[in-house]
Image (cartoon, rainbow, N blue to C red; front, side, top):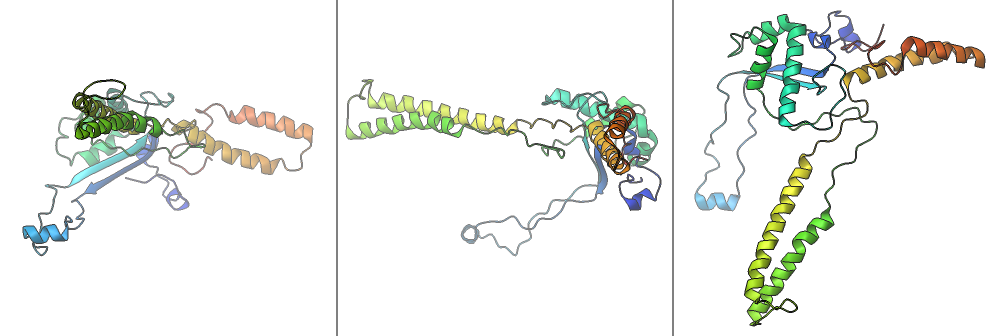
Length: 293
């Protein structure tokens, strides 16, 4: 399968990657994984190993794959229709629909190449349609958490934790609980101000502290799971248009050196009419190449 015409060397091949036949693929990679990498022995505390008799010279069990696997990774526009705006968030169901839509797009644009590769894979028998291929990939899907936002012109506002508020939410009932414990140890019969028994206050304070701590941990995890919003021009049509305009405008600057104000104004107007900077769909650069003709 040819690579994209993405460098002067690959341009000489003259045959573009089949993944460049759609306008959703930013980067695609396909490779065979014959086995997993051995990362060395599982570490263990030396004192603990001595006590338990764990001899470091004894070979540990090593993970092995039962067969070779074909791995396919792709960074794509997470949309169900070409040219649709990138979403700020996707539910698991929406993610599944996006992957299925992309798989159908691949099948409709490069079915022959996909068949040549996947015919060697287990379970591919019976895959005859775009929907079949989408279902096949979904059965083999592996969830990942690696984000792909390589086009940020300005970094987004990250989902920062309200640390002081969380510490206060957990710390105040904890201080109350410790105070109740101290009074109970000293033999006090009631809590100041509220008048209840220190033992009762101790139990209630411990329960509230535990609940507050659990809520704080859950909130922190949920906050970390929030996706970063897409960049303003993260979608592939915008990237291709930007590359196209970069080259065309550079040529325009060179060609209009020394022109009078009136000529420059007229030529720039013609430039806008011809290249349509606000139209992402055309004229633009084709996918998989390093420059427009």
